[in-house]
Image (cartoon, rainbow, N blue to C red):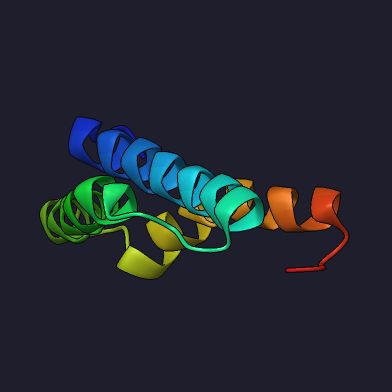
Length: 79
């Protein structure tokens, strides 16, 4: 995966998921900041998967799930 939009989309989804976890754990209610980065990130991932015909959105999306899963493991799955 060498597409810049795919990499940018993954980074935006990572940022949105990390901010969501931190805000949820500290305040109990995430802000709209998550949607500011999450929605464009998902759009970039889908657009990059459309442009890269050999890559599916599932493959790129699984890469985007790594940081939230690591955060959940560090938290002990207690949300």
